[in-house]
Image (cartoon, rainbow, N blue to C red; front, top):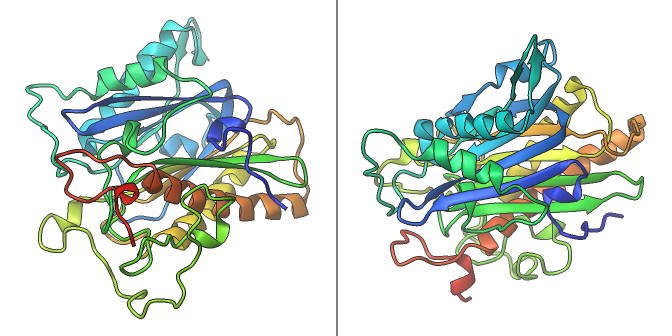
Length: 336
């Protein structure tokens, strides 16, 4: 039995705060996850078109065990600058990996493509993402906005606006799991031409509309709905996410948790993990519970990782808000 945490956000996992920053004219933004104390981290990439920074160090065989934070950003490759802004803020706070007299904040990052979304990307010589990364990290707290905020500000799906989503769960074994996702997939999070979410079997209460599964099930449910089928199909996508727990895990176990969370993509988005999505999940273990999961507990954590991720995806799209320049409608403003 799982129940949502008190905030139903990834910050229900002790040791994590999240901040957003964005530019409405740009229709893009940044989301920063701050780990205090540093958290064990790993990553799993299953999409064919990823954009990342500092992900090699997260492999279990590499030296650095923990990170000070993570960045999810819009802006395609330009958005990788956001991690520099996050590093700058954390360095000012005296955070980072100690090397002699120096502290180097460890902040891996991933980006999604939101350049073609109606926003003004004529930013001049330097993109604004370094400053947005600094602002997002500075703003980190336990409460933060979802929907059209942070890295989800300019996100789109095949049928509706995408967005920044988050969800959490308290497990019967006492562990907490939380998901954070910027959903910008090539595919659709809703079934056929309906407003019903693929993630409906995992919904807790009415956290993303309470519509359940459609009945009768539509005959077009298995039809592929692809974003921008007529233009820019190959570069306009990617869902990037974080799955976190308060359990004490090794880097290898954190990677296994990230792998399990990708099942949440597959349960919430059709299709997912395409050659033109850079689908990625960071795995975080804060260890705040000071407990190591038993084998059975870890199986339950992995299952909860998938369900929380699917819920977070639907919540991000459900909470997206309309803008006059939108290329896709906001789910909340449609009917049927």
